[in-house]
Image (cartoon, rainbow, N blue to C red; front, side, top):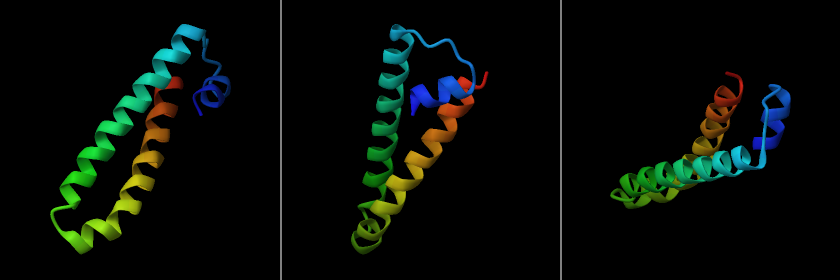
Length: 72
């Protein structure tokens, strides 16, 4: 995803930038997903059903954020 978005937006992507971007995206997505799922697990049935939806939404919005970052 990172390489595709960088090429699409003519972003100069070095190995260092690629590593930093991938690490930052992974860290942010993990923290947000874990925080969201922990909040939803207080309601057992709602939390189980919403877990998949929350994971999909975080990936979707993370892609939008990555696209915004590379389009600057």
